[in-house]
Structure formats: structure tokens, C-alpha cells
Image (tube, rainbow, N blue to C red; front, side, top):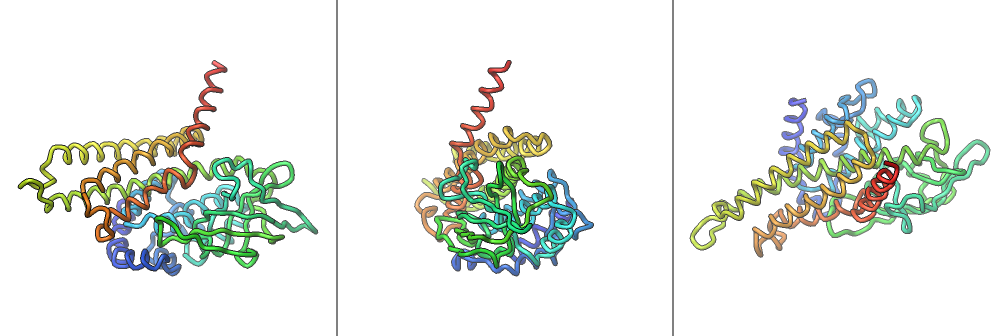
Length: 363
């Protein structure tokens, strides 16, 4: 595991760091990076070795995400992780043996990029309200509907689509050739990542797995793991922000003294490091418990705390932090999305509250 983490840090330094600023400016990173990650031996993190991956478990994968997250572009790291961690996990967990053999080696090798389409214009965190629907004709499935805020939506070769199916829900695999239209969204942050609106109209689809109407439980478990992945990537980026701000504080003179020697700065960085360690440990507890409610509450709590830390770090930069000359400005914008993406804080807390209230009423 240590060897993989060291390899990841070298890849970040040698292959990513020199290019990230350009990708952010262009608002796109080259899809060829997926193959470069595979060639470097750090793609297919939790995909089993028999399918061309590294075979790490979920706990190890989250540890890796914290290191990969130190790359100073959350849009980039989430775009990568969405394909070869989140989508790969769904296929590995719920796909048929034939689907695992068809798609997982291609994901691990960087040959296919995946996206996961949950959200709709009128159905965000409340996924029971989705209107994307499915019909079956002559043994084939066809999907009609619209999805929004889809990471990798422009570049993806295949999309996992959560849709209504009969009396319940199912997850389907849709080839990019079947998408009626793709519209790229412009955003406050996550600039290098492509985020899209996808429209489907009688788009031919492949059922994930072999049984219909299993999608609700599948999507809840997928989202729980995705939320831990997002939080772990956020931890890595906040670690980077702290180190960067400490370097800035060594040269920033305030009333004849460096900012790094100011008690308030020392207290904030000390407390922030403790809190990052605390959240990191909670993530490991969450992934081992596999508890949807616990994962939901942890994501809602952690992402707010992570952004608060970064907000204070930007404050320590003063006016410099509000300029694009300093990396903290980008990190601040990127981190703001974490309390929205993957489930907004308010409905997540409401969900936890309802589950806790129902449990207490039974006791």
C-alpha cells in the first residue's frame, strides 16, 4: 500500500502539477490522462486483479483518495475517481459476470470512461422524484428523460443511469452514442472537470445486473460510498491548502512578525490538522460499518467542516487570497461544492433526523 501511495505522489508531482493550471484555464483536462494513470499503475484502484485492477479494498481505496486528493484541482480528482472508483464499484457490486468482464478491464486500462447519472432538474437529493423512465420492447430497454450536473458527462463513453422501471427503479448502462444531446455547464469551480446536462430519448440501454427493480437499494449504497470518496478527496485537498498556507505564512510579515508565529494562526492550523485526522478516522469507521445513515450524516458534517477550514485559510491570506494569483482561491471555490454535490447538506441532515426520530420512536 505504501508503494502505491508513493507512486501516486510521484505521479501528481511529475505529471499533474505542471499541467493543472492550464487545464483549469482551458476548463478541460485531456481524457488521455486515464490511460496515463493506468500505465503508471494507479488506475483501477479497487477493481480486482483478475479484471486488470489493483484489488484494493474500500478502506484502502479511501486512504488512496486522500493522497490523490492533494492534487490541487478537485474537479480533476473527482472526475477520475467517478469513473474508476465510483462507477467501477457499482459495476463490480451489481453487474453480471459478463458485464464485469466487459467493462472493468476497460475502466482499469483507461480505455473507457464512465459517468453516473442520478440527478435531474426536478429531483436532486430526493431521488424518488426522478422522472426518467424505462420501457422494454422486444427484449430491449429504452430510456427517456433528462439528467443534470453529471460529472464526466461530456467525455464519458458509457453512463450509468438511474431510472424508473416498472413499479420500482433500476440502473442501466447507456452508450454515449445513444445520448440525444449533451450540454456542458459552466461553473464557479471544478473548472477542469466537465459537468453536463444529458438528454435521453428512447435511448437503448443495458440493465445493470440481471434483476429489474433493484435500483433503489443499489443507488443508496452507491451514493454512500461516493460520499465517502468525495470526503476523502476533500481531506487531501485541505491538507494541501494547510501546507501551502504555512509556506505563505513564513514570508507574510504583519507588524514586524511573520504570520506563522501569530498565536491565532498556530491555533487554527493545529486544530485543523486534528480535525482532518478525526474526519479521516470517521471515514474508515463509516466504510467498515456500511451504514447508509452514518455515511449520510458524516458527509453532511465533514464537508461543511472542510470548507470552514479552507475559508479560514483564505482569510489568513488577506486580499492576496481573493486573487487568482494564489492557489487558495481555486481551492476555496472547489471546496464550496462539496456541501452540495453528492447530496446537499440540508436534505442529508433531514434524512438523518427522520431516521433517528423513527428509531427513537420504536425504543
